[in-house]
Length: 137
Image 1 (cartoon, helix red, strand yellow):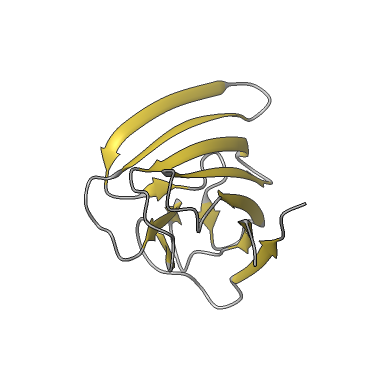
Image 2 (cartoon, one colour):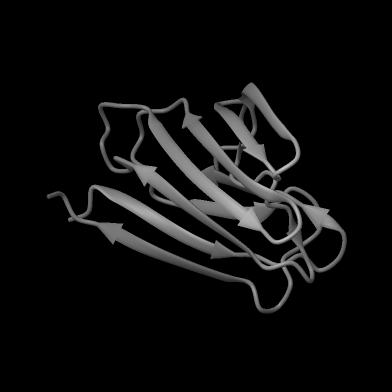
């Protein structure tokens, strides 16, 4: 009954820093691409990556133990089997600025599962992830 999904994530890292990443339907192959851009008020950066094993969801919004970060991710047309799947994420935190990442899963399969994880380490107690369904207008 939904056309899109929106995830609001407030992850915390046990120690060190990490990026929030995701995979769909247990696909660990090189089927993901993303383009990211961000800034912190004094510097900016951008990067495009293809043939990756995941989509990066946070950048300039590092997951840290004591840093409050919010990342909002749109999963567009997640159930439509006629198109490849896209994501749009926006993240910020108090010490590293803001970032936006557009992601692509090179598959027309419906998304039936979303795996969220840090690219290093593990999530700490107090991390929250809330998934919302968006109904077609």
